[in-house]
Image (cartoon, one colour):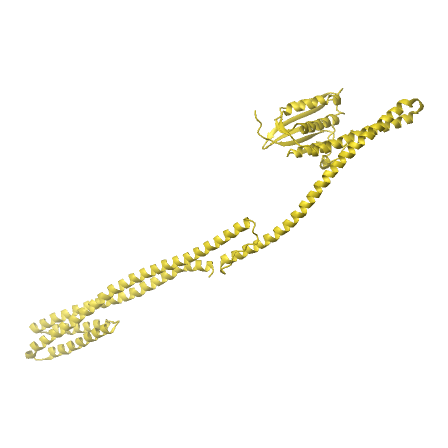
Length: 479
């Protein structure tokens, strides 16, 4: 049986038993009212019998038409009352028949009394008294039976109500017990299944022992576990493929970094040789060269130096990926001042104002953060070259669980449409004729900040300057 059907039965049981109790009370009330009515009629019959006795004695003593009329009226009234009596069993029927028969005999005796001679009146009076006494006794017996039935029907109604209430309670408890047992069994089975699945047994199925809602829930759970098993198998296969590809990617990245490092390192010696020989040739054979020859030698030297710088940047980028971080508490104010002093040759002969706000300390790798500040400040110096009065602002603050630092300049800026390329390797937003560089410095910044678990971003506007932010995890710094 469905649980919702059992709940409906529990909800309907009170209504059914209320109807049952109402029916019992209604039937009992009808019986009680009838018994009371019959008892009242019997009392009236007793009263009429008593009045007949009184009128009989009065007639024997005084006679007269008035008394004769009263006797007839009372006898007729008594007959009407007896006609109203109803019976429920043979005993009551026999009593009512006896009363009606006695009433008829009284009528015959009264007729003889009223029409007989004076000498026979004494004898008739005695018979009348005996008959009246018999009627009175039977009437009293009938009335007692009716009063007894009233009490009996009342007790029966009370017992019926008690039985109905006990049955209602028993049925409700039985149904609720069955539902509770079934619900708890289903919940326990579901809990056991969930624990099995949590432990990794995705093949476990809840046994379906009924066709009710708990059985349907078990079917849904079993279907879910089958789907989870299928998804887990698929994820396992994908994880295996992903692990293999991750290993391949890590191997390829390591090989690429090793290759880049080796190639860059191996290229430095030939480049130094080319630059050296070009310088020797230019010095030894300068008188023999025309202007175009000297220019070409200068082009060779310049491009050799650019190539050397690019190789150095590639090596720095490779070291940024392979180096291990040794975290220590860094005084960012002192570190900025140090980097600014190191950049003095780059800003010689220029008017540059450095505005340094109070920076929060941070835990990080000294070499890595030093390189980040050097690259960002060097860019700020480079891209403010065309400003007569350059301004570079360095600020920082704590925000949530991060320390956020910014380096702002009023230099050339950049178009925000290309901000996505800004931190890419070898990506440049300005030509070599405008500003020198290899497009590696910001890539190194991003790599170091990412290794610290931080983030980096920038905003700018062409001709108005740029701002570079980097955020590092803020840890508790011992005072």
